[in-house]
Image (cartoon, rainbow, N blue to C red):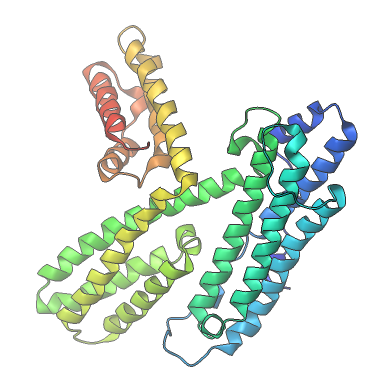
Length: 380
């Protein structure tokens, strides 16, 4: 059995989605819609659990890797099956020919929206088949992994959008309230951002040390960088990287590992590899452009602002409550870590302070400093 099919947890709907279904006067329609939502939840779950780590290799210029194709064939098969299960449920519960376009403005449009979504997913399955017949894809390990990862991500996004759009016709909702697996995906993205941000600081600091290294310090720096990359390779962030980015990390680890085994590695070679790694890791900040994180960051930013306003208003008349509100704001803002270097420095400092115990001028100055950091953060 492939990684895509290893006992995913039973599908369940969010409380808000259940509330919407319970509120529908047409109980038969609600039951049909629940079947679709449960199938979507199960498919999203199954399409989210693929771990590519065991398929990785630092070798990039080898001959066509048909062994990987044999390994990945069951994953591709299960991917198609998982999508088709949802498509079959939609066909059974809402049979009909997909219309040219659905207005998407009211509950009466839901069947048309589901049929449209079904048509788009079916087309994506066809595109997956075409990609898997492309020799340049199936003969290149990393290209194949990247394509599989891309399609699975696209399927999840389409399914999530289908649930969100259809649920939105029954009332105002947020994605977090109705999309299955949404909170877990946000948490994974927040984790990737935080850990890759720390990696960027570590690599930048190591690069400066490599530049200034004396001949007898080059080997030590190579070994330290190898240790730092090995530690990153054990994180959840590494597992959730895009295959394209992971490929370059794997290659860099292999090169640095080779240098760390030499008795006297050349500083110029280590410097070149470290500079390339630094550029790559800094480019990972592009994760901030994911719509998932943009929406998350706006919500956290607004909530922190409210807490800090409350903390400021209470700072003199009730310093205990003020300090508690400050600590809550700082704890919430930790999920913004990795968005801005200046804010990151503030958040690292905040972790070391016992914010809930601050009083007097220190409490007030910390609140005002925090407010200033939030005001300068670009989350719009």
